[in-house]
Length: 126
Image (cartoon, rainbow, N blue to C red; front, top):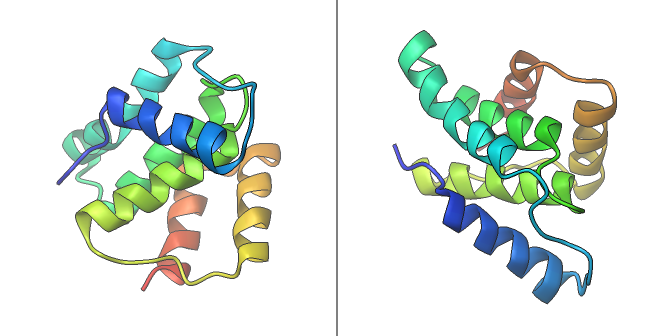
């Protein structure tokens, strides 16, 4: 299983925010929170034998809820989720852009659990 490193996460964030989105306000606010989020998939694998989709859900949830970036937390969390899925089992999320946006907002605003995110992924990943 391939896990995202802190350096790779920061590079994804910078490319997304600066180069793709043209943002000028971005960057790390909480390094500890980001490192903790990055460790969650490995912890889930060890402690509960979580499969790849549940590990992806742990990564997404941790990045989303830890608010480690100045701006772009949902966007970066989703990009990291896509990275994880591609790196570990070439698959893609088949949901529409509108459904993806709704999921990201719901996951943050309604505080979806990791289990609910994993169920959503199981329905959307091919």
